[in-house]
Length: 130
Image 1 (tube, rainbow, N blue to C red):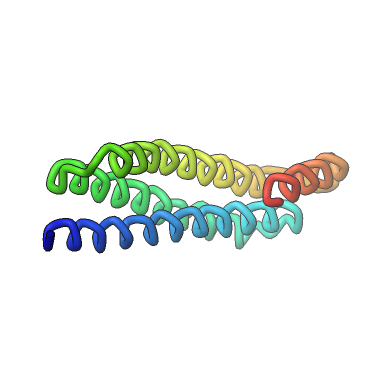
Image 2: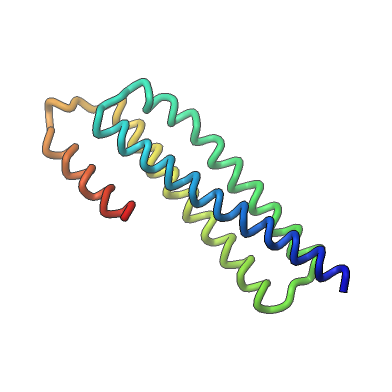
């Protein structure tokens, strides 16, 4: 019974870390959109560097997933949640990569060439965030 209590504690920490990662990516995405809309090249450069944290977090969560699977032998429902979480982490990291590409575009783009494009991207991004 003690083993299950330890597992439950580890699983709860894992879920909290997962939520934190989702929040981190959401904020990163929002910051990249803001940098693009305002054409803040300095912020865009900082965000490109910050993407490394997203990658590191994904790897850490995947390692945590593997440890939970290998060392705790979770029951079927917990097993499904952990495996599904791994897929979610990959998708969140990909969203972060797309946001990073937008930050890179911020550095390369000229707002005066296509101002309607910036407004369109901002509108789409706000819909995604909602």
